[in-house]
Amino acid sequence: MKVDEIRALSDEELTKQLEAAHQELFNLRFRLATKQLVNHREIPRVKKEIARLMTIIRERELGIKYPEKS
Picture (tube, rainbow, N blue to C red):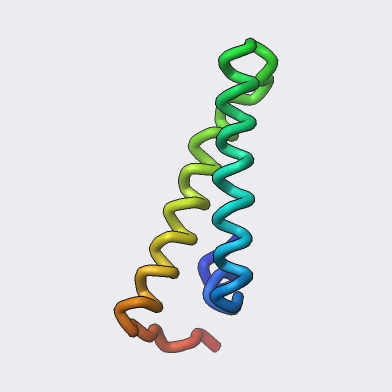
């Protein structure tokens, strides 16, 4: 999910996305520990998504606004 798409989400949707990403990371780590994970590059991808979501949430808390691209 791109940053522009994340910024378009409501606060409630952001929270749901963040919870889902944390759950996905947990499942990936579990599969890694049990040697069932095929593509290990999924873990950093999910971590980056969590970081993006948390950054947007923090920007909203601080009231930071970015101009929309056209």
